[in-house]
Length: 589
Image (cartoon, rainbow, N blue to C red):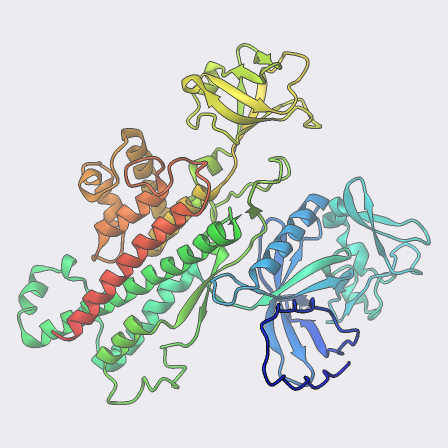
């Protein structure tokens, strides 16, 4: 590498002159050898065979526990995200998009998004029951290592010598072939024959991420246990954690006694401190989404409890003493002051496999549909009715000249009427040559202007309406996540969804006075574990989950831009400040 020369001496009397442009950045020709190595963590199953340690899995990929080691330094635990063996080419395209998004997002260090550490290019790998990983040879001829080809729009393993072929759609029932004696290069132990585990099926990329162990589902429970553990050590009992709003006559009488009064006062502070941490979680989440929507113009589309992790910077459960929490002069008052003033966690968004940037680019038949018990509580109405089959009494009459059509009565009666950005496809158009994009809705919802090529044969009786998931979908999910944190029970979200629907149908203003008149409101309010600021929090939640009402953050389900997230962020920060001020002011009473 060339060294810079010394700068010339400055003239005695410099004259004003144009500033020369800086040279363009260049890449040196020298490279640096890295001693970065990776390994997968293994464990023995009930049969005594070695299998990889799995941290979790989704529809397209699973996450394995690994180790990253640089030189002779101690190994670092990491999470490695790998596509399922049966993943298709469309899944690989989604995965490539996720990698591109994560690379872009990793440039910002202070944003609550999980950063990638590395992207690996993995060859076919099988973990033998003996504990060794190998690149499988051809099970048929045993002469050549298997390579990747694409067969019938599927990735496949292929032998160039004998023509052996194993496509992705057959790997589930033929996986044992890759751990046969002919395929193994590690051992010839008959006891492990056909019992290996495929780590990576074909040559593919894998994402290396920080290994986090605490998810949003367990956050509230873990934090409560940590704080109560300190309470037991400092106060000696936990009975005072009964909330003042739910106390019995005996506890109300006992509260007049000085000792009981002090204990109950501390109990309320503990409960408020735990609530403050929940609100801070939402502040961090909304900050991340506001940054995605506004700065990066990215829609996550899959915000759910299982896609949010929490990084703890320290624990309060007695296993860590570097804070000095176990010193005798440190009181529960000091611990509460720490919780209120010095957060010890950071909430991080993960899994950008369904994310879109700027304009939705994928067709509905290529896009994944979030569903299942872990996703359903956080799905917006347009997500739950993402694709809707519609049967028509009469075919749609298209007007190719001005590219419009009269919206049939069956489509006007949909719970989610047509809006710009919606897509209509013919159920028999397998090539999707005649997919139509709604560009505008005119004449009070009677006429639709479309883009695309309408079918020549006017027999459009069965069609599919597909609705895009845009920024309001993320905002809706954030509101549901806030309520999930407050209730700590995903099954409690059904009444909340019903309350949102009722408020939407009755076109209620989203404020306390208006919501209190709804029959579902008391039950939704009661499900919140904390007795403080319940009304204020429900208002924020419903403003996120409704559209177009006075007070709603988003005007419609197709509201574009970062404004809804910014409004949400402003209000949740105000609530956080109010709770914090209340706790701090109580300290000095």
